[in-house]
Length: 230
Image (cartoon, rainbow, N blue to C red; front, side):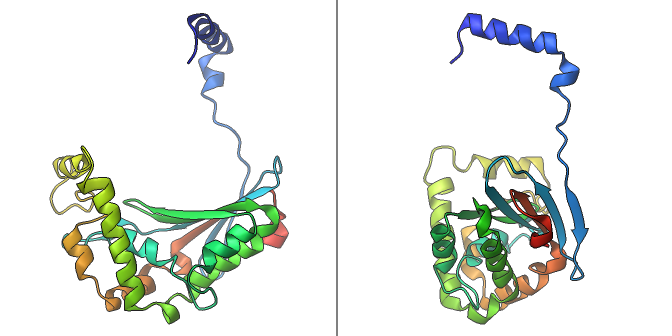
């Protein structure tokens, strides 16, 4: 908390600097290019600390769903952490943590993102792990894994929406803001009845449709050698 005198000093300082300076956008130099397979890449070097971050934005979210088939973008985000051809279940987290790195993902209306952050020398591992689950997820995906993550998402819904005060406010507000057939009119997490009905065939079709290199923006930021990253 800021005392009255300190607040007054800060206000005076802000006034003396001027709004134009305060609102000026920072300069963030970057390099952007597209690989032959259509994958967009953005590189930004920042050597202030020996850390690197990788972020992958797939251009798909709940806004690509239809009424009656909701929640799958978020469900598939969970499935992407269930192992791939060269990464057994649980090893994605384990290998990153052994290198001093962490990871997570999220879904919104318009995109699904996955990210890793860790020491600079973990960059090859981060890129390899992301590449393996983008290219070789299906050989190891099965109904047991889909059902497991289906239950995880349903529990997440209970914890965050159904069983907390005002948890369903979002579900009340969105239909008022958007027409009933608009993909923003339902919550990203979807409806339980829809989550219960998804099949392996739908999961495979979804992966083949959206989890392609030409539907991805990959970003690398931090202390790394751009030539080596390429």
